[in-house]
Amino acid sequence: MRRLLTTFDEQLRPEHAALLVIDMQNDFCAEGGYLQRERNYDVSRTDEIARRIGVAAAAARDAGLAVVWIRSIYDFKYLSEADVAKRGQEGCCLEGTWGADFFKLAPALSELIVDKHCFSGFKNTSLDEHLRERGIRTLIVTGVATNVCVDSTLRDGFFLGYYIILLEDCVGSNSRAGHDGTLATVRNNIGTVVPSEAMIESLRRLTPSI
Image (cartoon, rainbow, N blue to C red; front, top):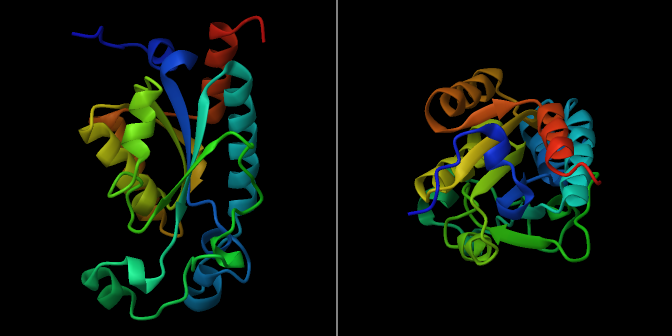
């Protein structure tokens, strides 16, 4: 049986931790994107969230962590009947469109991009397979929306046996109650909730030569 990783530093060791960037896409985050245009969502905080994720991703790369990008593609041809019925209107994160493009951030050339067609990055994707091939045991989770795709992905990751670290200043939602609820659930039942600076400081301790 593998050794339990009981401390924050143990879980964050670069050889078995990966940073996930979830749904940082124009239709979710940008002025003129689907959620702002069609649902009048407030996207005023997404620039700052993207900036912080960029800093966290740079620190992760410098320390040798894997950075994985999870992207929604929501053309109706990919969705379940229940999802189509709930949405009612096609147009969010359509394949090959500006809305599906990454917002203010871009993967490095060698970084994995996983496309998904529902809220969870694990459901009917190759994400778990790729992570296990790399020996990943800990997921450092960032992105939007905290209470929807971030929540669904981290829960499925936890159920699959991954340690979960949620960077509280690198996630966001139009619903404050939903955002706070996910942070509370992770803190109480699933994993660790910390600001991104705590992750960066820990990586500096673990990789002092960088």
